[in-house]
Amino acid sequence: MSTLTRMDWLEQVKWDRDGLVPVIAQEVGSNDVLMFAFMNREALARTVESGQAVYWSRSRNRLWHKGEVSGHYQKVAEIRIDCDNDVLLLKVAQLGHAAHESSIACHTGRHSCFYRRLDAGCWEAVDPVLKDPESIYG
Amino acid sequence: MSTLTRMDWLEQVKWDRDGLVPVIAQEVGSNDVLMFAFMNREALARTVESGQAVYWSRSRNRLWHKGEVSGHYQKVAEIRIDCDNDVLLLKVAQLGHAAHESSIACHTGRHSCFYRRLDAGCWEAVDPVLKDPESIYG
Image 1 (tube, each protein chain N blue to C red):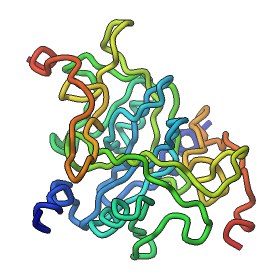
Image 2 (cartoon, rainbow over the protein chains, first blue to last red):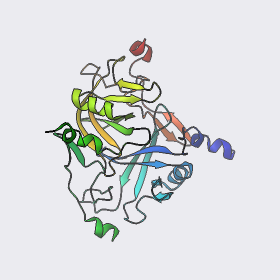
Image 3 (cartoon, one colour):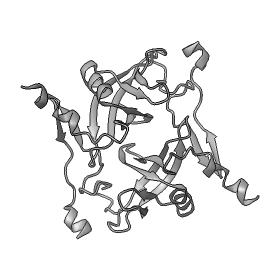
C-alpha cells in the first residue's frame, strides 16, 4: 500500500481555514461528553498511531498530548466522523484515576468540561470538583 | 430585573470571530451524540425562549429551526457550557419518530451524524439508514 493510499482517510477530513477540525471526546460506557478540542493533521495521525488522544492546543499553538501534565490520558476506543466530514467524535476511556473514582477530564478537576448548566438565566456549576486542580497541575 | 441583567448569560458566552459558538447536541436517555452545529446570539436566545433547538446554518446563512422541514424537532432538556465558555452542550429529546422507532437526527436518515468509524484506514458507515431521506425531505 502506498503512503498516499494509507493517508486518504486523513485527507478526507474537511480541515478548516486554520487546518483544524473540531473534536468531541465522549467517554466509553457512560457516554458522557467530556470535552471539546481541536486537531490538526499531525494530531489526528498521532492519535491513530498511539491510540491516545493528541489534540492541537490553539492557546499554546502546539501539539497537546492530553494527560502529559495531569496524567489524565485518554485511551481511544474509536474515532467517528460526521456526515459533513468536518467534525470528529472520539470515544475514549478517561485514564488517570483509581477504579472506584469518577474520571476527570476537565482542568478544573471535574469529570467533564460541561459542568455548568443554564438555570433561570444563570450558568450554574452543577457538577462537583473531584480533585483540587493544584494537586493535579501543581 | 433589567434587560441587561436578564441577558448576561448570553454575553457570558465567548462568541467566535464570526459571532458563533459550536454546539453539541446529545440525546437525553441514550446520551448519544446526535450532531454538531453552530448558534449565534439570536439562535441561542430563541432556543431558550422556545425550548426547541434553533441553530445558525453557516451554509444557508440564516437561522435554522431544526426540524422545520423534516419534522425532526429537538426538545431541549438542558443547556450546558464548557469551562472556557466557548462550547455549548444541548441535551435534547429528538422528536419526529414513533415511540417504537429509533430517533433520527441526521439528514441522511440516520440516528446520528457520527455514523462513520475509522476502521483499518477507512471511514466505514457502521450505522443504518432508518428512513429514506427522500421521504423525509421529498
